[in-house]
Figure 1 (cartoon, protein in one colour):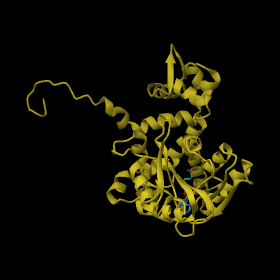
Figure 2 (cartoon, rainbow, N blue to C red):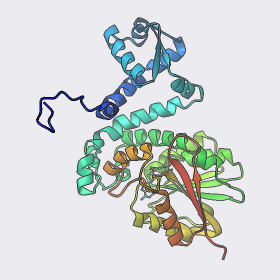
Figure 3 (tube, helix red, strand yellow):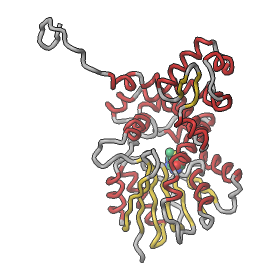
Length: 356
Ligand SMILES: C[S@@+](CC[C@H](N)C(=O)[O-])C[C@H]1O[C@@H](n2cnc3c(N)ncnc32)[C@H](O)[C@@H]1O
């Protein structure tokens, strides 16, 4: 029966094959997560192309389970099958070779343990315009960071994941921004100090201060000490909305910060930065961006489920031009866009406080 005409003529069913990865999106992620947790990729890296029986033995799985897992990872292009042996796909092999895989593994844990539950509240978050996923995080407070401070295990998980997100995406910040003449940098909401440490390593003349809530500052202190950079990076605990922004810097960095707050809050932060900066000083905004025509990219569109459901009532990935408008309205000049050369939608917008 043709449902549109009511006739019995047989018509070809509409091809919805492009819907498969979306309809089963949760299952695709679970194939990747199980492979990560069971260390399939590590096994194949160590042992080379292996049969299903060998994988089952190596991972301590029933053979029927190894078959399911290998079917999943092979269909998703994470592994390849030749004859009856399985090996890592070229892309994953490259991630192992260049050291990216441990970052991806931390991000998988972050998605599984922090983002996945709250994502169930996406429709409700859209309906109410509030971060309804926060009910999955214990504690009180209307944003994620206030709650993380109350649950140390979750806080550790968050900063392990956040550290990895930053390491994955910060080459644009390290390599494509000019730090000539910058002596002292303030990293506002600097978290685990991941970016301050990477910047100090890449630019030996830089000194930095990581400004964040007390819980994050404890994590930052440990990382700075472990990196042996205590003489060049210090910390300041405070609330960026309640306490004055530390002054005396010639660059203020907001890394993964403007995705959390409302446009009004972002402009208030820029105003504080403007006042704290020396004349001629620069502000640098580093995070993921959405395209100006609102059409993507896919990474930003999908990551926005996390932002809609969890960090704060207003978190979202904004378009490039919105950042530029905030900087202009604050008084910054020489505003520049710096696009990431890598595969993530990260970039930098920077501006300069005019000379006195
Ligand atoms: C998404 S994380 C980014 C961390 C780091 N900048 C990075 O890129 O990896 C946001 C950071 O902002 C901090 N933060 C949130 N609210 C804050 C506040 N009111 N005052 C200071 N820091 C705050 C959080 O503690 C967290 O470390």
